[in-house]
Length: 190
Image (cartoon, rainbow, N blue to C red; front, side, top):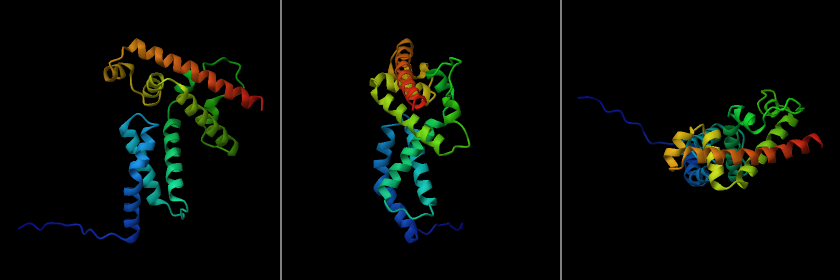
């Protein structure tokens, strides 16, 4: 007769605390993420990364809720940062006269405090500008540019013609270009 393996369900107090925290916060955090990320898979990945970071944290956390939501927001930002520079090329076509290149600021490995500050301003402004768009334009832009979903697939999912999707993205890009150019001018004239 084969011996059956069983795993005891004995958890340490620390594991129980993590489980309780996960049960208490996971639904709220997932809702928070889904408001900002269109892909369910990406939202679940981000939630997993947040709790993985939480479980591996060796520093004491004084305000748990604030820490979880701040970490979640940072993970969402990191997801957008990992996007290729093509997004910026679309928003900022090269004019040849720019003193300030967003790619150099956003995608440098060695970031000092000033670069980090500029990154945060950029991503905050981008999120705000996306929120100003009509829902259809915002969703089309995010799906195509940030989630790398081809127009044909978006068209199948939404029953919207590809030409309409391209038009929506174009209007989104024009708006984002204007808002981020304003930010760029403010930073250069500071």
